[in-house]
Image 1: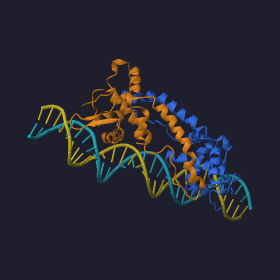
Image 2: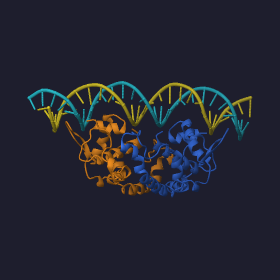
Image 3: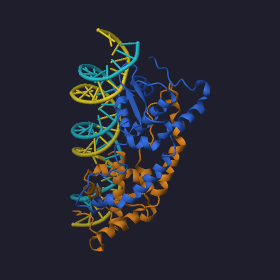
Length: 151
Length: 151
DNA sequence: ATAACGGTAACATTAAAAGTTACAATTAAA
DNA sequence: TTTAATTGTAACTTTTAATGTTACCGTTAT
């Protein structure tokens, strides 16, 4: 799963968990929604667990659930949990080239500012917001049937 | 070259070209600076050429140069030229899942805003700015010897 | 006890990126 | 006018990262 796909998938999972409240969802159920393998889901969720976004229970009827209120989880939180490389990743530095060896210093400030700008926007949208938006799209009648679970 | 590395490399090349004015630089020279292969450089520069950022001349003593003033090339221009996937890339949509099938619509606005916020910051820094910054770091004495060219 | 689950390691497969070789077309310069 | 240095690009190989799969241990509800 490429970095950008991983992020979108993580957002999808969080909305899914909020959308099916008072249930834990198994990796198999989530995997169906994402069209992938349960182990891939479990691996991805580890990163969200490490950031206190998703929690799990073991054993029969175990599964995953949001570790805190959906209104306390925003898109920046999930971004931080799932990004695995710097936005501006330098190629191998060539110490004989003054451009190469100084590149990071040259762009450090502007990329810090750009990331801050993005952060302040992403922090404004929570999983609760997105779920509300989803329910508006669906209408209340069908709001609680995200996917056929088969369990 | 992953997307983020490609971007950093493209920025490096543009600064390099500005830093060595009144010369065209060969793909071999640039490749040394980046520690890679000349063909890789030529391929990357194609994307910058398509966006009117870099131009080239053929034949002996041919090579690459900035297609316009360094003060008219900013970091957002280069970002647009080198990004090859959406920031928020969805996994394969599962039409049976209402979260999956509505995900793009749910996040469309906020990601548009986040990208706009980033854009407005990146547009504020040009290649001319970065080169000035570099020359300040180096001091004028050694400002014109970015790399041993060997040609 | 049993069966359904998460956690995780080991391995296999696939896809993408990077590197390489080759060569036609162009052009400066000997 | 020949030669050599260059870009542009295609074809191919190699390497690396992502993804998928299998397996098994520990946990827990039934």
